[in-house]
Length: 250
Image 1 (cartoon, helix red, strand yellow):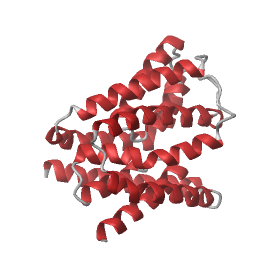
Image 2: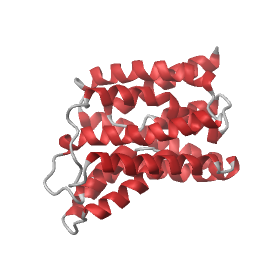
Image 3: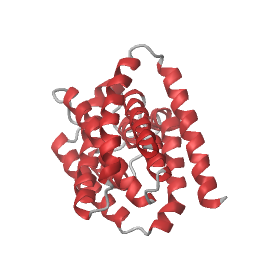
């Protein structure tokens, strides 16, 4: 019963975070590890559990997705799908002890993305431009990261695209971001499910709670200030990242 309470609470919070600012895996992954799921299986199970929430968001944006930086959306989706499959395969071949050592650095990368991805992308855009070929190559790498871990990958996509999409509004990029994050997760979900690594009993608690949290988060997002949401998310991400560094190296 205690495990169910932890997972339901984590699912609600993770779903709400994804709806508000991203970073839901900062809650779902530690919760799975806390109830005894090994880290690699926890990462895979977290991806599967939060996937329905991504599909719900995708449904909202289904008619507004457009080409990204001059690259047709089907091409971007194909590259992201390939990257997601590669990333998922790499994760499943990573020994648990090695992943435990890598995990804090992945969380740190995601935390930095939450904090600096958008302003860094805007600053770099003033100094350089990238073409469609580089956009495609970068999207493949982002797909690999999404399949392997995926924390804050949506923000990383927005920051990367801003280097090529001069003058583009972030709002216009939200639909393709949601689509391509879901594509990367789709590849990973299929691979994880076929591999047998997913802890379905935990997913059964996390996934419905994540859907409910996503709905409640969307409602809250209409009332809460964006700055307060962002700072609260960053504070939680920093605390969890520090805890995992202590767990791995302390």
